[in-house]
Picture 1 (cartoon, one colour):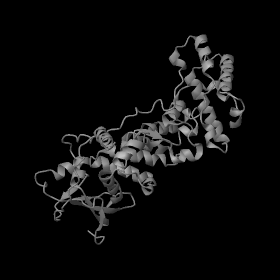
Picture 2 (cartoon, helix red, strand yellow; picture 1 turned 90 degrees about the vertical axis):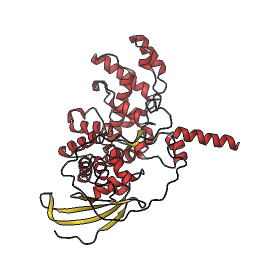
Picture 3 (tube, one colour; picture 1 turned 135 degrees about the horizontal axis):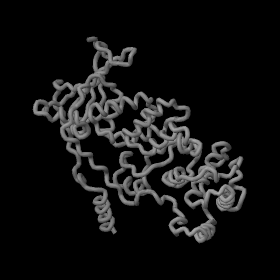
Picture 4 (cartoon, one colour; picture 1 turned 90 degrees about the horizontal axis):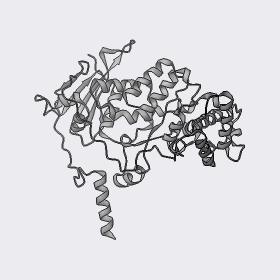
Amino acid sequence: MSSSGEASCIEIDPAGDMYIKAIEYATNPAGEDGDNLIQQTVLIRVSKQALVGNSIAFKESLESSDNSHQNALGIRHIRVKSLVIWLHIFHNRDLPNTQWLNLQMDDIADIAKLGMEYKFKLSRFNAWFAFWLGYQDLRNTAPATLQQLGELCETFQHKFGGECIAKLIDNSANHVLPQAFTFYPPIPEMSLLQSTFQIQLFGIVSPEDYTTWGFSPQFQSLYGSPTTAYSDFYRLGTMPFNPEILPKYKTFDILWMHQSTFLAFCKTVDNIAAIRDVGPVSRRAMEAAWACLALELYEDSPPQSHSILRKVFEMVEQYWVDKCIEFGWSATDIECLEDNCEEPDHEVAEPDEDEEMEEAVEVPRQAEIELGIALDDLDIEDADEKYEGLSPNELLALNQKSVNSAQ
């Protein structure tokens, strides 16, 4: 076996108590690992606790009776870049960096493959995958790539991304949905409470703990922020309506030629619905039709100001009251939904508990783990345990108690 020279070193955890020796082999023209040529060898300093807590394969190997005192682990036939990304996530809870957001499709596929081979907690990559997908350009994406992206969305539990990909694959549905709903999946975002209280308490909120969704930078560069919260935008974009009721407006500006644009739109739609005998249009369907038409016209002839796209459903309450009486609807059918109405309750989010490691699971044969590299044990400085184990609510109570005592 040929050698690639001395191993380079990466310190994922500078205070780590063990090393991983990762050996990456060069690939042959068929894309498979070569048998003899080592491309690179890397020593990676890590925490044994982090490995055991995030991988069944690592847990079984490092806690076996024969290897429980080992402080080194050998892994062959893997891509070092993929392993380093997983190890960074296991040890850190910060935002993905720009370089990782620019990973290629093959890189993400290999990250998923490595995670499944070594029985990693795949959910640890969920938020990172959602950020990555939100930065991709899905226009003109090949069908095979879309299919692969859909599978990755399922693997990493990205509901919104999966819906976007499914609609891109199903071309028959795209005529109803503007590009804004299909080409630009949302990214994880902190809730209002997280961006205030939790940052004040903990200094940083991990993307893994974000409780809501927001517009991606790519989306905002084109559309701004059409609604206060992405959940409002999602509701408007996915609420079904009959496309036959849409007026044949030619430009975006025509939506803003009346004093009450939405009221004028509603009356126009009512006339179209009566002529085509498609029945009365509900408030939810009317709002969805307005948003769909506005976005389609906006994409064809965008105005200079993004803010003009914000939905304005004012001066219409009496219109809906009259319609409710006319058609015998209930009060809930015409209720005005406030901004953020579908956002999570404003409570301090508890940090996610570590998922329970599955009971004995057989590690795939291809995940070759070799123990036995002789390295000295490394000392770890004791962490400050003053606040260890306290929940955010308990920390809030302590903080309030401190404030009260100071007054």
